[in-house]
Length: 160
Image 1: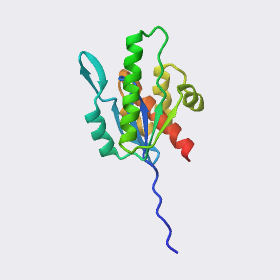
Image 2: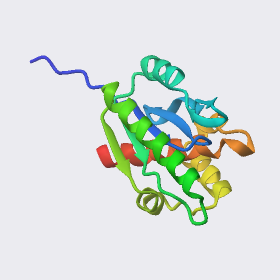
Image 3: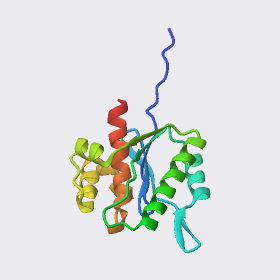
Image 4: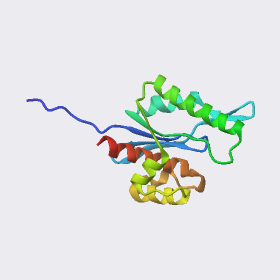
């Protein structure tokens, strides 16, 4: 009898904000990571779909776990609209690229992994859970990448 060779999935975690990030988990480690690709159009930040598409082609994720975006208290109407527009663009682009998407509320994945809302704590927890991958979020502003890595860990635990 021939036994099928199984490979672990390539799970993409995405913190969808313009200051967010992407992290690809494979074999228990983050093998690729990047800040959310963004450009300025008409003075406003938007997701750079050309760069995002290149990353998706190069990284070939099996699936994506995306944090559900929401408006924040005291966020203006125009800012809330821009946030929602970018989030919808991201989800549509992932679906058009053929990447299966699971959306997860921040409270759900953070509770499951014991992550508080504090960004520094999220970085510390990502470094503890993925010690060989912490070089992907070395700077203070890399918390979006660390949270994307945590989303990928959450996704791997749900899938397996």
